[in-house]
Image (cartoon, rainbow, N blue to C red; front, side, top):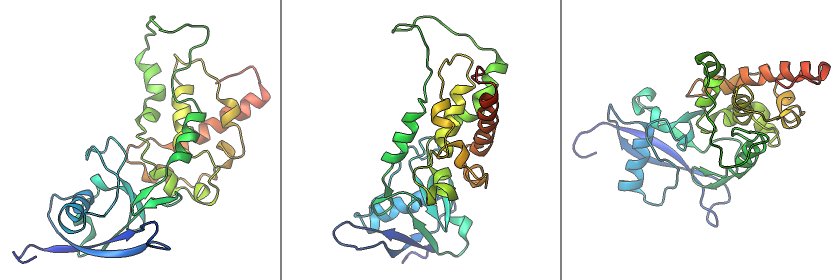
Length: 244
């Protein structure tokens, strides 16, 4: 920078369909501002240095989950990861591992969305016609039973960190199972997700490495959710009339 502002080197994985046979890294010098997140650095590159760079972001507040990327080998939310965390740099930014790359840092999440839909991540009420008009009050204890799992923002960091998913894309995965548990434990829900979860590619595919929980920015603890449902599934195999 000509004005004397300190900079940090940011190396970004670039993949342009029709131009690149495989991803290549391109380096940029970004102002090392004390309050800049990695996402701010990417926005600076996009706005000031290279408008062709592609990536996803939205809220900048750790709520939407769309800015998840691999930062120096770790799946992170780039809006909550600061440039100053990396000393003199460089910082290497890549797309999330385990997903097909569409362009640059943008990955294809259609497979995840299909998995998520398969667990019916919504309240299931049986024998009631729409629109529902009744209220179903909960005690604080009933809310607490599932609240932790409801914090998932579908950022997909857990999938990128999961060694099972990276090797087996058919694995249902941490977020989908944790969200299934969120509704399984909800006193208002009447759904039965046993046939989806009690599969080799679902809870029984998990080897309990725990990386999904370690990288989760919302402390959902999907590893715990998976292990809890393993107990439920095992008990139900012995006591088939037990649903939860």
